[in-house]
Length: 296
Length: 292
Image (cartoon, rainbow over the protein chains, first blue to last red):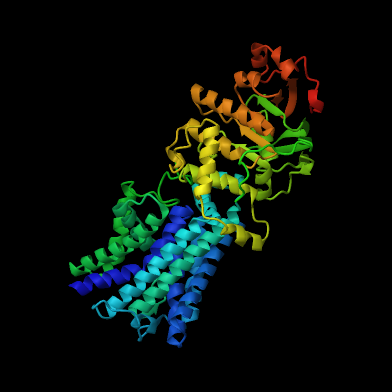
């Protein structure tokens, strides 16, 4: 039974980048970014291809982040330069990314048989390989939270938050909306691609369809984290959505334990999110009815 | 981060605002076209507090938007301090022009704290112009640090605003009057050459309106900045600013300096609102301005 919990903990932390990326786009930038479905699979596929060909895991993760950033940049440019609607810009990129990821992988599924040496070098806390993953993923998640907290505490981070909060005012204060939005979306997708790479590395395979429903997953993690911890500052919010990722995976583990068929998981997730939206517990830009661009 | 006072007067040796031969129009529903401004000219000496009144659709806010660069004119020139305002990038314009919107929610970021909003306004004066400068300035400072807080607290305290102890509260929790006061302070941080006030008290109750107008007068005088205030309030028009102008359908139909304004009858001024306008006795342009 304990392996169930530690497994859920590990999986939750592997998905933390997805939750953080979703938080960045939806809560900080006020931008409903559907690119995450594509960039998650792109990150997983990139890491799987490189690791299976003998590349060091850090290099694979780094390139996954880079490709994710590029995917986000494309969405940002489509939206800001071509004036395409935010949702449609993400859909366009995601649609294209499916072919790109498939081209990159060469086939729809790549297995990864070996655990990264970096993980095996970590202390196992008496829990074996799951414990080593737990240590590695905890450190990675804390690193991400610290880095994002730092970046959002700089002038540039403040500009991004202002852009999401009140674009008119941000522009009046000389903030370049096109550049800020593009960089923010790129960074968020870099995080999501990292999550895809970590998930692929953790579960031992990458599949070209692994990104389907990522936005919904990320949303679920953000909602749960915010609802449970009710953060009042940005660093706590980042920690909360990471905890939300763990809780979300734990709920899935419990549901599976109680007999939910794995094929029904995404349906159950979608229904949960729909209930939250319908009862007004969640306000998502562009996704909720009667929700303007500005937070009132 | 500069340690210089947040509010200081700009250099006044340069010319103020100059609008010359301005033209602007917009399409009407269907296939029509409305030419609002056609050869419109107006000059405003440096440090002058100019109040603009006029009926709805007269072009007051459009004029402000054209000066602010949020609308682009089809012909003519707009200069500030002898420098052309058209074709300026957002961050350059933000250095020169401070603006207070009509809606208190529009001029601030409700999700950011008071200190973060002030910091945001302060960064206008150190914008990035090149890629390298962008990176350096982007990650150039953690905000708002202890020094910033101290300065903001001093500044707000000096202006008599009860926000000095609420630096860490989200602006969304402030009242409309407090938000508009903050917006005004933000617009004047860094001492812009021009302050645009777009019916900035229209959404406030009389008490908050009086507070914000007193703060407006104080900041404009203290900074010596050129100010352009659009208002529908004749009471404000007759008691604030150095000069009053009235617009009607994109044209200047009245222009009074402070002394001439003293003799204006509010009832007569009120009667000038509307379609059937007869040019008032004082349509000549004091301070060197010219009516279109």
